[in-house]
Image (cartoon, rainbow, N blue to C red; front, side, top):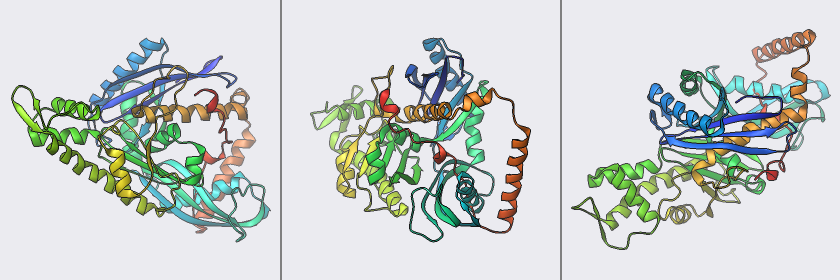
Length: 433
């Protein structure tokens, strides 16, 4: 949200298919204190299959959620950070080679390598949500973790981009703009959920995080602390409700109540009654649930196969999201995939200790933007903002852009990465959760 003299206050929003979740938190000016100031959760309308279907209706729901948050915190909100998901998200990798006069490699060379990859994979009408680079080699050497500071005249690496058509992202941004606010960041939902739920060992040894929400299932894979693949399918908890409602000709509320009873193991008879007379077989309900679960499991297995990392996920599958309470879900996924499967909750912050799996995305968005703010503090970004702009620096940056354009026109390949340039602060969040 806004920055003030004493602290940095930000608002993160997860606009889901069934619910909107929003959180406002504060980071002290010295970066030593981080806390949640307010959290709200309201029904969502106007979003279907993680795509904006009715912008006006969705913006009305968003305005209501933020109004509740303002009342709770007594803090004005001018900017928010949001997450995005959906089938339109693409996850692609390309190998890039970049030659130059022999020198000590710096951030500029890495940045150029990644920009070259963007030039190869993108048409210019996409928004990049996440960038990753791995398998880096200098002068045809063995793979190195960090090329910066190494002398060389050629560098190559695998650049992974996760992106979406700009028009799809703009639909969400428009919803925010409709209520007079600015969308400060648009982040990948799956990455946000991973940010809130995984630890360093998970990412290093290999893991697939699966966020099963009410309207979609998002998967994101990590290996050797690198993001390697991500995909989304518009299939989640609401589809169980829809199936039961349609096949038994009962209301969605009645179907939801049946699922809740199964989740809480509150059904002990062979049949249950919906309303006064409708008699429903528990065995038939479980068969419907199993059939829909099979669809989710097929999506999981296909996505892991597509990634090329089947058999390399040492930490198995990690489930989060609002729909992971479906009866027997873990056991069925374990049996079908052969991987160890476990549920996880997002990290609890000061001011929001009582968390559940459905909060993973919004907490992850908040974590990501606050980590970025902390990195800005550490780099002196806010101090530099108060200084006058150096005209010579602007000219230099424009010249570098021109040089890059010439390089690309001469067909020297592809790429860009900014997120990896921030310093690692792995222990920072442990002070607050």
